[in-house]
Length: 416
Image (cartoon, rainbow, N blue to C red; front, side, top):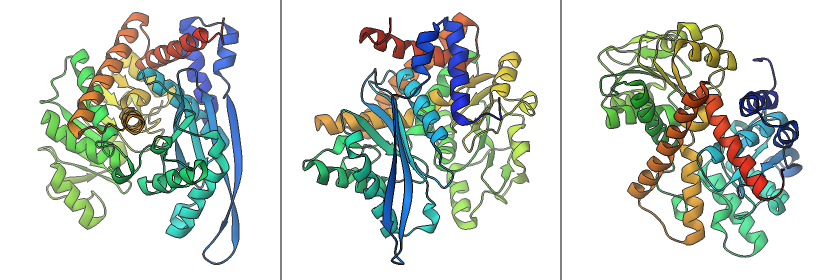
């Protein structure tokens, strides 16, 4: 199964939960297909005077629960199968968190590292020109994703408003604060994950203040994970890695000191008082909590049996393969799955949308309080279904999400 393409994996996960739920074949068929797919060509006059045509996508998966929601990624290896899979996962993620959204996703095949700011702006505005009839505050609400930024969201919102000729800040989330963005959005993924971890630790009977942590990845989610483990739980982060390598320090790693070192050295390696370790050594280190926050397929059927952590909190998308899930379940390692653990981002995006629609803007404290409520309720729901069906937590999360979408479709008369 590890060799399947992304959408095949998404369908396999859906079918695994559907089997437990005893869903009929007609319902499974409806849930297995996107509602609609748009592929567009975007001509951009580059800085050298030549016109280059970029390919873009937007996939609407399901809107039974409300306007569709999902990011836009700028990625040289982007493809339709991946966008379809991500739109399906967004459908389940929003449903799991109880958000009044469906799922969508978008992408453009491009290499942002080889493009100027001027070229990126032209591309972003061209994409919105092409999909304008496909999006809107009550239709489909995009957001940033891989290699897209608040600035890009600002350009997109501005282009959309030019087309519809009225203010529409709710068309897109992840915007700069000055354009209606939400406080708390920047660290929402890691903050939400900490609320999930807190509930998981209660379930496992683990004292997070006395726990040891290993955090793979030192990008946005990983950096804030180190920060919040220090601040919220006063826990001891003993291992951290980035794309260059990892470090281990038994006495604990201070967030501010590591951040300063990373900014100066460009890597976490050679951090004072620590020893350099490999990525494999980090994953297999003797800790209570492992937080993969980097890339997909890090925990597999090959190394899952070597994991010593009691809890795995997936802040990255897809860090564990289905084979690893099975091993963790058999070893009684609590896997807190990605579309629960990293749902803080889309949840605060929902808050941003609400603030844009109502014109009532919240304090950071208010955002965090509401995020805590949403993440806590979702985690408790997943753990309850995990117990009820004696299945792994990822499948439990799917069962909840799928049932909510099915209930909405039945209420609309779209399913029997």
